[in-house]
Amino acid sequence: MKNIFKKTILVAMVAALAFAAFPFANAFALSANPEGEVSNEKLEQMWARQLQVYERLGKAFDDDDEHLSKLQERIDKAAANGKDVAALQAALDAYEAALKSARPAYESINGVVSSHQGFDANGKVTDAEKAKATVQEMRTKLQEVKSSMNGTFKALREAMKAFREANKPAEGTTTERDS
Image (cartoon, rainbow, N blue to C red; front, side):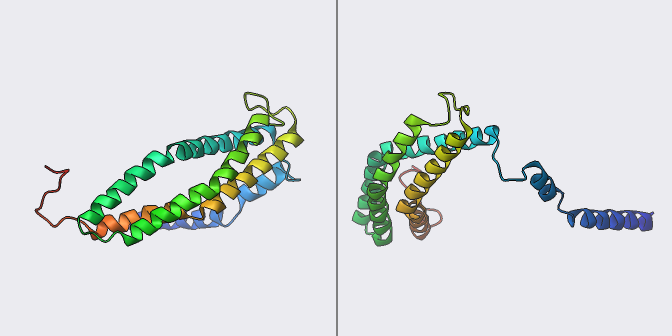
């Protein structure tokens, strides 16, 4: 019985490897879209995703003063308690500077969103060529914002993680939050 089971598994694995060697998905994608044209449905999906990114960025830019001041208070409190906050402060300063430099790029996106050429108010394509141009322009502007931020948010998050790791309370001690 063991021998039959082993042979069955072996045959299944060989068949799986044989099927994995053939690029079925790529061949289908090429035949479905031979000239690289983007369907209206795909344009609508891309536009909807870009609008979601724009809205999230807007929330981040609107709430940045509040969040940054809270983080600065925490850093000041940690420094007053004798903690080394130099790396964390440097990351926060870089992030604040990046936010200020990225704001004009973010605000320039508003013109693209308000005109939404090629799309109606519900995000449906009305003119495919204009919609493609709008999606491309939006992509370019979102990339400008990203490059202006230059990874500073990720660096800040990593600095906060490293700070927490370096300043973990010892086993068996309680912190203000624990009590």
